[in-house]
Amino acid sequence: MRDKKIGILMGGISSERDISIKSGTAVYNSLQRQGYNAKGIDVGRDVCDTLLREKIDIAFIALHGRWGEDGTVQGLLELMAIPYTGSGIVGSAISMDKIIMKRMLNAIGVPTPEYEVSTGIGDIKLPLPFVVKPPCEGSTIGISIVKSKEEVEKAIETAFQYDRKVLIERYIEGDEITVGIVNGKILPVIQVVPKKGFYDFEAKYTKGMTEYVIPARIDEKVDREAKELAIAIYEAFQLSGCVRIDMLVERTEGIPLVIDINTSPGMTETSLVPKAWAHLGGTFDELVVEILKGASLKI
Image (cartoon, rainbow, N blue to C red):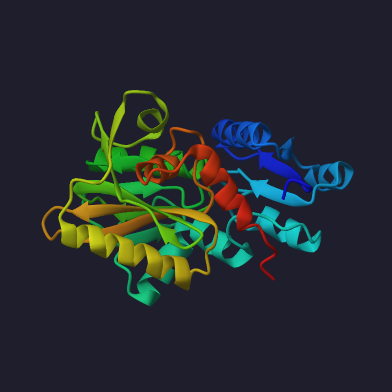
């Protein structure tokens, strides 16, 4: 692919813009040092004109969140006949919206925490504690853990700052794990241990705030089940390329419960998928090229 012009799509207009720029810059630097004809593209509302002007042959998607990880950019690239990395329109869209994601998980028999959907303050039937989320945001943006009735209104108002509907999910006491898949290859399970208990934006992106254990300190049976669930989702959701699936292991029953599907996971050299890849002996540069190999049109 060294004779092709590769555009690394990064930045975008979502709340995860800054993280996307870090991912895109890491990918750009990797491709540059490996001799590829790479061009970094900061995605804005004029992205169509930019892609036409730059005349790229392949798009490496390093966008996170809305208007980049939700099927919108994928649809544009399909129309422009530009092969791209990652999942297609359908897989991206149903993975991005956590409400649609959970309905799909229920339909295929994959365990996920009980939930409700709210379009206002209203009555909530789930018992405390519960988690309030804007369903179409990533990086734990707008999420609150509600432990008392007095916290409900503020949590829902916070979530509504980012979305038109709100996901209310049963709080799970347990270990957080994540499973990466690259071009159908399952990666080692990583256990995420935030020092302050909640894996929020600060814990994710502040050095030293979270311990990452590879392989995860979980029962062998749970490890196997988590990988089986990840593959089942990868196939049922028609995903491709690099994907990361986040789960919580309920302490009482030891069951992995799926809470998030990332179709464009972080791609800095310290992100979770690169960490799992490195545990198998691969380099960051090799991971970038492996993802690039999967670039295609999906329709």
